[in-house]
Length: 475
Image 1 (tube, rainbow, N blue to C red):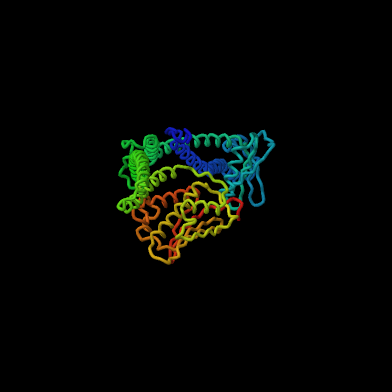
Image 2: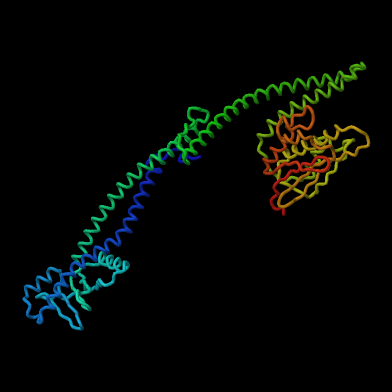
């Protein structure tokens, strides 16, 4: 694992900064959504205020029969109040015009029709004014205070645009202030509720990972009843279990090392005793001849027990080296080693196709077969009576992308106790004095190959199936 995944990023480069940035971003996004109709409303209000001056001028025009008789200073004051170059009053198909003493000839005229009250049109007009180039002239059109009358103003757009920019600047400053205050308040609340507990749990996980055998680093859960409280309690329970497992594992490792040394010395001693028993068995004393076979059998069991314990510790730590292996030949070798081939009491039938190959570790998979065949032989040899046809059959085939090897016999089958503790070391033996390590070793080796070892129910006898991944290239 790299250093980045094993160290804390710090408070602000981690969740805190992301939380603050997210809160501010969301608030600003909401402010932008609010800003668009707000700036549109500001523009419409600004134009309507100017239009009201035009309506007043229209009343004057409507009251005076001759527009030319109006004093020039009065018309100029009306136009200056509206900020317009000219005011046009239309009623009953007639138009009347008020303009400055020195008329302005506009280059670009843009119409702002206040009779269009839909939000989309107002927002579009506001954005057009806000981002327009300077120097344009607005033609503001609105209804007068009389029926079927219209008032038009020709005015420069620059004052409106300047006021809209000032309004936008003020709106932005207020929005940033609201976002900052809201983000700070939310950050404090969220930090108390979520960020601080998550940082506490994360710090504890990193510290416990570096020293899992230190019980002082086990998390003390809070009394929260929500998901974080559940997380803290589950993490504390998990760390407690890991602490206990590691201590037990260390004790078992130390004990196993001591047992392995004692077992090795015991096996050498028993081997020497077996050699002496073989010499004693050659004596002519009838009593010695009667007791010697029992002594030899007892020593064989003791040596077998010691050897199986050593094999159990050795086999479980070796990584299998896969290579193409002919299964029929592997079964023949295993049968010979297990003293099944050529056994005078047991018929052995190797039904594996001579062309069938599998990618396995020949030494380890051979040991699996030896253990299964040896168990089958011992189960059959333990049966008494004449005229019994004892038989062990080994078959193999490719099934559904898997290679299945079957080892079966026609013996009495496994007793209930052995079935309940199958594949459990020191408990799964089917015979008295057995260790049960053979099946435990066989299962671990098979699983290391990516396969499974299972007991298959049979009407009579015992059957074990070794299921392995099919060899690459085989169908």
